[in-house]
Amino acid sequence: MKIARYSYQGAIAFGIVDDDELVVLTSDPMFAGFDTTGDRVALADVKLLAPVIPRSKIIAVVSSEAFLLRPNTTVVGPGDAIVLPAASDRVEVDGQLAIIIGKIAKNVSVADAAGRVFGYTVATVVTAADLASATRAGAFDTFLPLGPIIETEFDEAATSLRGLINEEEFQAVDLGDDDRTTEDVVAALVSFASSVFTLLPGDVILAGPMDTPADVVDGDTVTMSIEGIGTLVNPVVRPA
Image (cartoon, rainbow, N blue to C red; front, top):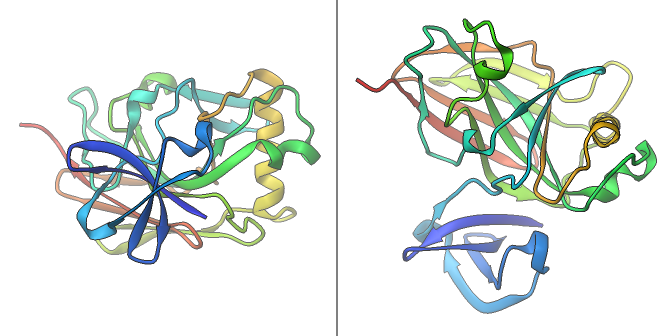
């Protein structure tokens, strides 16, 4: 099931994607379930927003033993600009899978981890690569585009990610690794994160290789795609 968060006629709402329409939900399905209002709106008539705004935390797993936290103010949606900060002269992007937690999780086993996941979306992870502080480097507003939708029935077994800058490919990777499928990687990351934090509904865990970033400059367009989820496009701007 594909879930969209969108703006329509001045209001923010949630809907189930049904071909070129949205079946309007009564509220945020992560907390209120999938009851519908009976209304439909055309996808062409809405503005898609970031499908989730984390209420607690965004966890970027750096390795099997390390992670970084990003503020929820880094999140923007499809079509929103990645704004280059004055403090940095070198900004890079990297595509990743965003795992969205749906149930409270603490010290969950790898076997039970999948049951805590609400769904998945595409993430463009932006970093000011020339800043010494890793936390500061990823904390600027607009540094985490998410979208275009949440896929709740995503087939993680064999998943590829593709990244382009101005239609030139810079990233084409399998989100698993040499010994594990994407499904195995997701379960391990959720279990690992829950051993440190209590994971809350709406928390986001970023999963990806993090070894194929590319620099971006003012005027670029970044496109990230994950098969089975969709394509996320964001322009890059540097304020005058």
